[in-house]
Length: 306
Image 1 (cartoon, helix red, strand yellow):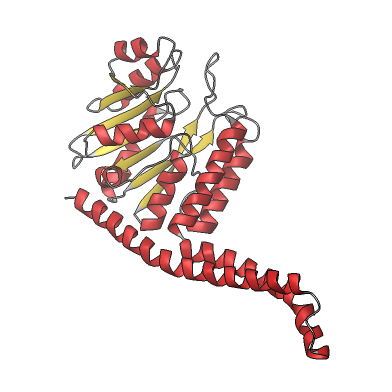
Image 2: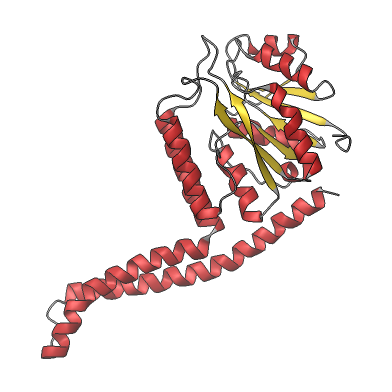
């Protein structure tokens, strides 16, 4: 890692009093030359004091949500490489060195720590299925590069961090980070990392169903924004198919008798066909706009590498 002039470890923190001190200490041992930042997200326990006493640089983000914290971290801190890790003690600091080494050696933009559970209770019930579902969905829509898109353990280059227009406010930030890399075709990697159960007394901040729905909504919006041609052509195709199904018996009757007996259905079918054409037009127009946005993001990424 001789080419990495500075390394910043970024730890979002909300009520992690039982774990944050050990997490900071472990990363100080694993990466002695790194600067360790803990961003407090309105903790009501002793997290701030524990982080400071362990040697972290403590800052605050008042807007609640992991996405808001990550966006603030990326904006505030300058470094050659960044390690993003949760403060709950489930990730192993010892894995960070090889992630950084791979980032440096292969000139990658992002490395994801694919979670390999050390015990059966490392993942909460339903989370394995949810992670697999979201990973497969993102792979189908944006391309396959990762096996664990929701991992909270990642390493980034400076160019990636400074070119990311993040908008997510909560736990859907991991999905946005992944899609940003995939849509720009950035060089990325994935390394297996050990994932432990939460220490006794520590509680997950992830709400399975509300946060799961937010991730679904984020994937939907990213699909619409980053793949507008596919998105609107798919909608247009559905509308056109519905129009054809409604129009078929009317056309058959007209060809046989010369009459149009069901005007409301004919009007509805025509409206659906016009709507389908509008969807196709929107897709073509927004695809041109998206290509311009993608070029701008790619130029921002390339400029940040200088």
